[in-house]
Length: 224
Image (cartoon, rainbow, N blue to C red; front, side):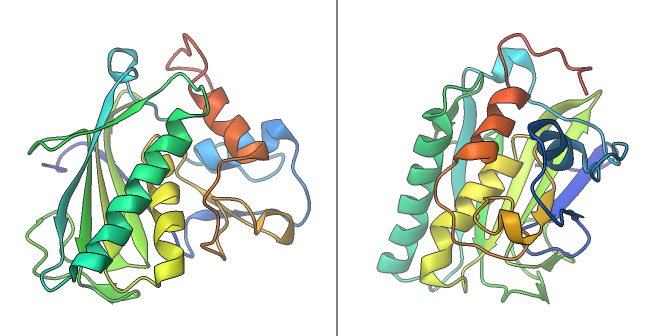
């Protein structure tokens, strides 16, 4: 995938620069604006609202494009199973977007399991757009134009703890749909968007609400 010369948006599952602080519970409107455009409570959007174009929403393609050399079969199986669970969870919400697992060279959402340890700079991944970037634990980059997502690239560390893998895959895949900002606050430690934990494997409550709202039927691109 080529990620040059077009809007690039980056987020990481443990990135200190990409979260909204929430000292207490947020209304549904405030929560949605936080995760979709980085708005602080009662604040303005800090990032553009991005969605996959309508013509793609009935089948956004997803592929596990590569895994780190030396990953043992049982370890690869954890990422395979985690990805399948993430797609099932997202598709099961009834939102106006569906993900489809494929085995092609140019999917809409491309996932790479890389050898880089969390907090280190990715090198020699075989993917030019990843090398040189710090990998918190998981990282997603979107290429977008005119508020429409064109491509998504996800990197996940092969050194993630076993109990975190499914949660990281669910978070990064959800963020690849345009909900790019995490939330930090005690109320949201059980949210897939939590800045401080990687333990959630279900989209429930306000997490589910946000994705359904982001892809409500006939959602116009300019809605904020």
